[in-house]
Length: 461
View: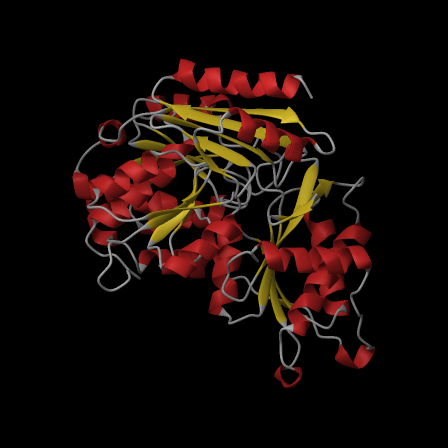
């Protein structure tokens, strides 16, 4: 699968060493075309999550980059936000992460980053994909090959940047206790380091970077029962769950209740806009936040609760949100899958940043997670998916647009329909061969009713 989120495939089937090499070389070609001839070879920072296939894909991709004339700095096992931070820190021309995010272990993928650490937006991703499909990459001769360089400082650099932007002593003074589920992914070591620096007592579940996921790796309610039980057992202040590349964060409250990925971004936005230190705000304008079309209306509510401001909605995909944040100088943003983007650290979804902001919020307010969550107007969000067929995405867009012609319709990404008290969004996934259907309302039965209406339309296709 090729799209704004990069490349993903089934290891040994659709994702082979040859595919990885050619796609990486296409990215290297794209970087070379944007770098002046006198500037030397483009430097690309590369990291991988902990999947057993990671080293194979990493080595093949590194060969493609070097063959295309790039210099590669290899971080080894590293989080996606950690790679992005190192791109910025080393003033590299780009970055590459070998990861399939929350997908099962049989998948892997390649995510590209620009020189600012953000993922390439749709128009740039399309150019890279076009080069790959046409085989337009050009390999260099021996005199232009660069040496592969290793760097082991990503975790320390990432954590240091977060600590520079939060009140460390305030958090240390609360002596918080946290249970962390790192799902044997890349985020275990760096998150443990962060929590240690913050004086947090850590009960760490599956912190080793073996890549052997102990449960399905997407941090959803049904996959986090062990985390919820551990929070209650250890009388922790919160439970935190990461996905394998540590760009998403889910939260369990002190009672062992999974509060939902949507709350991760809502809490972070509320806290940053309320804490009195709003970096990057437009002079004379109210601070704002950016989120994708599938993200809860809680974002609009917490922005209003924090004093008002604009909420910019974008197509789904981190690159789209990051692009809007830069365009509008949004001080925080992200996606409702637990992905927090805080430009004070980097323009990439970051579970470590999300965790640090939550802990600072707990310390500043002196409240529990459940008490803070109770202050946000609640919604029921229902997420469904169906297998996609050729032409299905465009056909369903037309059907939904016609059925709800009297409502507010947004066609930036699939089709989203808004009413005064609810919304539904139908779109093809960027990362899986499925059509996603997401609905939100004050009551779950209403949200489920909208899902069923959409399914009814699909039934006639």
